[in-house]
Length: 129
Image (cartoon, one colour):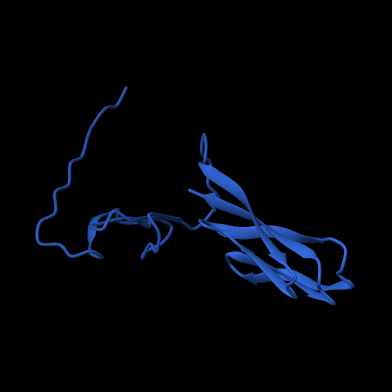
C-alpha cells in the first residue's frame, strides 16, 4: 500500500496565480480556490474539460408564479438560478395567447391579446451546485 501526502503553502500569490500545477498534465489549483482539470485557466470553482464521475451533485428547483390581472404581458422571475421552462394560464376575458417564451436567463414571459381577465405566468427555476 502506498501512502503519502503533499502540503503546498503559497505566500505572496495573487488570485489567479497557481499554487499547484502538475507537470505533464493539466491539473491546476489556483490561489483563489479554483481548480482546473484539463483546463489551464479555470473559470469556476471546479472547471473540467471532459466527463465527470461523482457520487452526487447538489441541485435545487423552485416554481415561481406571477398573477397579472388585466395585463397584456405577464412575467414570472426566478429568485435564484436559471429558468428551465415555464408556461401561462388565462381566464375569461383573454382572447388569445400570442406568445410564451423565456425573456431572459431568469424569467418566463407570456403575451396575450384582448386581456380583461386574469393571466398567470409560471417559471420553473433550477440551480445546480
